[in-house]
Length: 126
Image 1 (cartoon, rainbow, N blue to C red):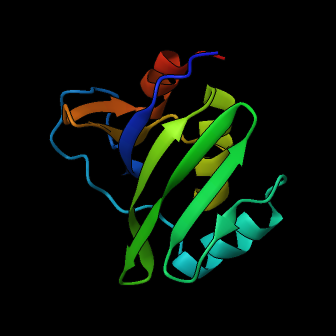
Image 2: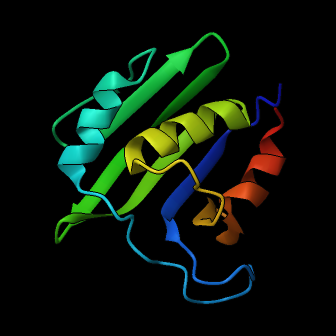
């Protein structure tokens, strides 16, 4: 397992497959309230707070972050931690309410390097 720590911002899906586009900051098409309800059903259940802070940890993963919302949609997620692609995918899918997140935009920090989720998952291992 890759235990590298990552700090990322997650935005909604891109409209093209090219990673060099500048149209990257689309909102995640779900409400904060719906995301919090889905997080309550994730097993093992993460810790979530009404202010949008979340934490999900186990013996092989630790991901913490914040959900930022406005105008009825999640504007972006700020997440940091470590885990396999399975852990990151499971958490993001639970928040977003979508199974296919491969074209969601990921900004790796502090480099400010854009990836789609599929490219980010390749950095994580299985």
